[in-house]
Image 1 (cartoon, rainbow, N blue to C red):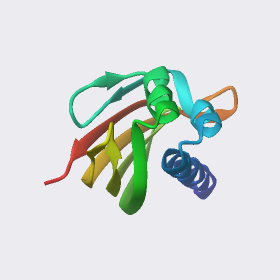
Image 2 (image 1 turned 90 degrees about the vertical axis):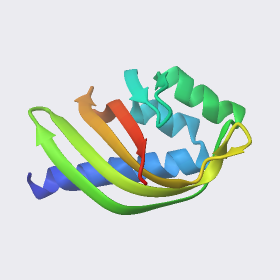
Image 3 (image 1 turned 90 degrees about the horizontal axis):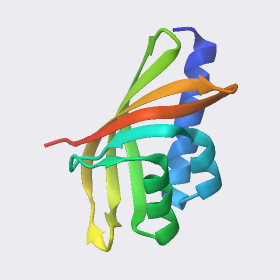
Length: 124
C-alpha cells in the first residue's frame, strides 16, 4: 500500500474516532455511507440512520477511546481496517466499557472515503 493511501485512511479513521467521541452528526453523516451495514458486538445489525440517531439521542456516549493496534489492507478499490480499541462509555445509560476489535470497510464514494461495512467484537 502506498503511503498516500495509508495517510488518507489514517486521516479518515482519526476523523471517525473524533466524530464518535463528540457525537459530531455532520462528520458522521460524511464518513458513513448511506448503505452502511454495521454489526455490533451484540450481533445487532445497524444502519447509518440507526448510528446517527443513537448519537443524536445521546444513547451512545464515549468518555474515552484509545487505539492500540491498527491494521490497514487494500482489496481492490476497498480498504479494510482492523483496529483494537479500548473504550470507556455508555449505551442507553448502561456501561459500555472494554476492549473491542473493530473491522471497517472503506470505499471512496464521490471522492470521499466512507465506511460501507463494519463489525465490532469484544476482546476477552
